[in-house]
Length: 416
Image 1 (cartoon, rainbow, N blue to C red):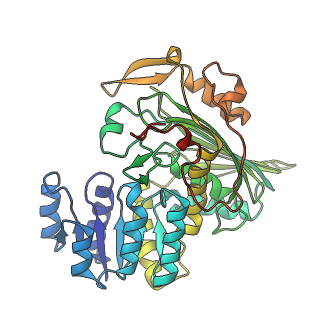
Image 2 (cartoon, rainbow, N blue to C red):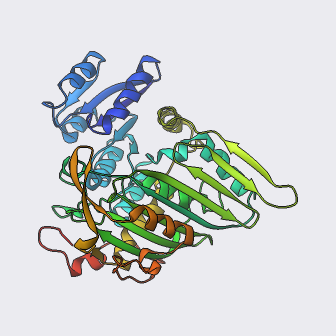
Image 3 (cartoon, rainbow, N blue to C red):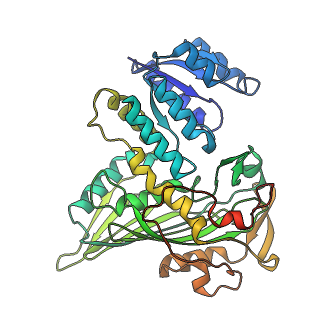
């Protein structure tokens, strides 16, 4: 039985805690230790963990002092700025790591994590949960086997409304920095990061590969009173060949769940979030193959089981840092490509969102659908509010994020 630790038990971490407790009941693991920095908010959960035999620590330093060399796997669902430092500390304490997405805030932190893997002989798995689902595995195998011919383009778009409370829930939501650490929290790096990573995964030729960006061009806009952008369109030319287009926003009052389309020389793949994948083959005998959606609760359970299996068997497929690095590269280089443009006030509207007054962008559902259909950035559509500017960035050799074009306009308070 594997000894498991978790850093954090509230927020999204509660999902991991519940998964671990279920697996402990099944005799699959022992939840040996948990870091709880806010016991006043987590009283009932702390009592539950203690009753299950879990030791509670106030911070990760005290946990590693007591548990050095005793933990097989450490789960790290913490703020983005802490992903790298806490993962490296866990590796050096003898544990393997499951870190939440994104891998890290910057590419240099990502490389430091990969170097720590080599140094310690331990591994990091990344919680891009879609890459653990059976239907994604089946679709990727079909792509590699040529089911739609040569993949030419991958497009994804989506609208997930977010009210002020979403940004006020902690000190890093929607921020560029926390203290001196880059966070770069946005729909691209966080809430919809899964779908960008999924598109890059489908764009690579190998089963355990994610397409590496070679050229990135971005269009970034801010509607809400936050430091970072809340609306973006990004075009990525990959080293593997396919172009990946990604358009997402939180500045909306209607939810449009992410849709993804893969176009190949002999067919296409269509997917809507929480729905089945469809592979549509062209030719003399057209055909449609459907892969049913697996509930995310089951996917997260499978992810945890596979990460546990990976401890003893390096052949077990998990999302590695090398596979998650392309996402971080895109998150960093979009700021090299474009400045964040504020949407003119005439195009902002205040609406009620989950009972809260929230700023939204007029006409956004139609605009983002047009961007998806045509594969064009917002400014290329001639939209009157899309006054941003940007240019293509060659990603070859990019290995350090220093602020990109943010430093040109960033105030001491972290607002661009």
